[in-house]
Image 1 (tube, rainbow, N blue to C red):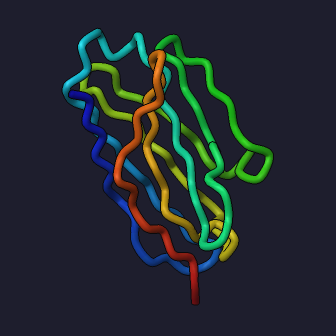
Image 2: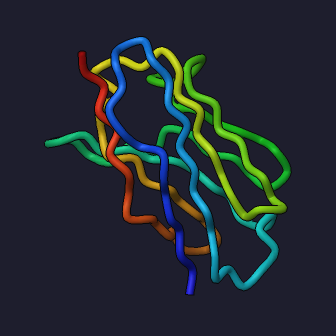
Length: 116
């Protein structure tokens, strides 16, 4: 049974940085087989996929975070990260880890609040 556990959320001031982590377990195949990603959902808004990374190292970013967020993965640790810089109040949301292999799997999310 696939499990994704996020950590690293919290309260940060505008302009600040946070690093989110997501540890995957229970995956039936080697971690590099899976496309990993991060999505976020702000109150009253739809979930938005903000960054993805394949096992081969290809990455994609939503326009809203391009140049500020960086996704990376440590395949030896079955872990994916999201480095978030230059945060603004518009980045406030619950951030979810995503694993794609046929089906989509989601973590329970970690709250990021950007406020002064």
